[in-house]
Length: 136
Image (tube, rainbow, N blue to C red; front, top):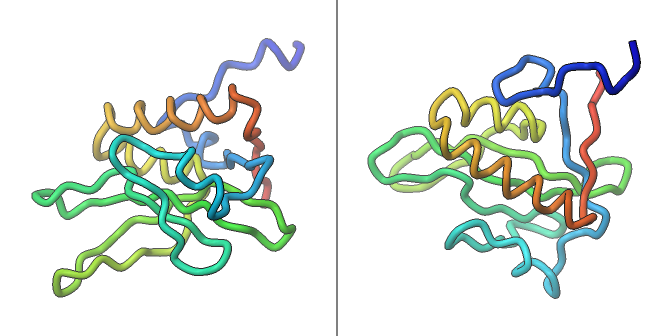
C-alpha cells in the first residue's frame, strides 16, 4: 500500500491531534495584518507570540484562540489555546497542537472548526506554511 492510499485525516480524528502547521515566514509587525480571521486581527502578546480569537462568543463559556508562536527549534507554528473567563478577563490555557485545538473546537462548534481549518489550509495552499505530524 502506498502512502497515497492512506485515508485522509479529518477533523475529530485522534491522529489529527498530532498535526501542527509550521509557518515559512514568522509573524512580525510588518505582516501580521495578512493573517486576519474574520474581523479578528493578530495581536502581539509578547515577543514572538501572537494571538487572535478563533472562537469567542459572549454567551458561550468555551473560547479558542490562535497562537502563532516560536518553538524551541526557532520555527513559528500555529497552535491554539482555550480561553477561560475570570472576572471579565480572559486567560489563555496551555498551548495545543494545531490539530488538537481544531479537534477541541470541532467538538464544540463543528461549522466554526471547518472555517478555521479552511483558513489554515488557505495559508498552506498559498505556500506560506506546511502541515507536519508531531511525534512525541
